[in-house]
Amino acid sequence: MAKRQAARRALLRTQKEEADTARTKTMEKIQSAKEESRVIKEARRNRREDWDLGPLAPRRDVGENKQYYGTVNQNTLRGVEIPKKKRTELWTIVEGDRVVLLTGRDKGKIGEVESVNKETEEVEIAIPEWMRGKDSNPSPTRSVERPIPLALVRLVYALPDPKTSIPRDVIVENIERRNVFRDKYTKETVFDRVIPGLEVSIPWPTKVKPEDVDHPSDTLRITVEEQTWTPTLLRPPMPPSVIDELRNKYSAFRDRHDEEYIAKKMAEDEEAKAAKQTAKMMRTPLKELHAKRREEFRKGSAEGARPKKITQDMLARIGEVIVAKSMCGLSGVATTAGAEAAEKNTPELAQRSGAEVEVPETSEMPRTPEPQEALPPPKRGE
Image (cartoon, rainbow, N blue to C red):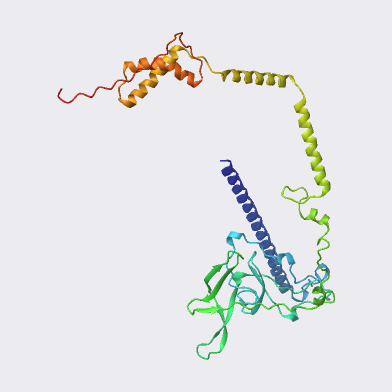
């Protein structure tokens, strides 16, 4: 029950954190939309004012806006993170694909995807070199790639013309994901991109391996492969003090210890043994009481082991039982003579067993009569 309550509390805590995160992302998205709307409204108002005033329109690229007029804040270019539950799992557009813009001033232009951001579901399209600002440019403004939402671009692929067989760029509206395979070890998902209807498979762009460039501070391969240490049996491969750093010095599974540590442990064992012996030699009232009780118990056990005196009645009863069992084994019927003989023979049996027996004072020893033959069973009809 406690485990279920803990799991329930953890689930509620997680749900609350997810709700708070979603609420924060929503507020950021709203603020970004408001800022963008404000900038657009201000630009439209300025344009209307310039149209109405004509030659008397004021210059707006002076003063504080001299260097920043016509630009946008870099914070507005940053997209809002999308919750994990609403993100696209399998992306059909990756780095190196050619895409076309569907809206904006550059609508219809084709560019290559430079990077993708799966958290905000945006892509960055490479801009020409002539539009890139130089690092030595003292101006605080420069042209950068603005992230574009994934929904505002479409994949472009070159398909052969059915009449001329000349490849031409085609905008792919729908893409199917087929042969989806997820590797349980690398956690990577692999699938094929297919154009439905045409059954044309779109290959993935080849990843260009970056070239290795040598720098003055790089270590040479000949220096890396040089052998600078030679193992030997005359000394251990590492100092003894390193062993204590690699494993626990006082581990119970360690079988090699320093001599000082072994001597210390043996001295502790000797002290514990001496203290235990001293405690045994001390006589307390409780120990004396226990010793006295043990002595009494020992004496009582010795007395109980002595043989008890057997009376004539006990011997008679023992003889009856023995003779009855023996006669039952011979004929199945116990006779009175057998019982009398048992009474006379019990003293001898008792003497053989080592018990003290009261023997009656007489000069003649009783004789055991011969057992009588059992009568035959009566015949049927008599």
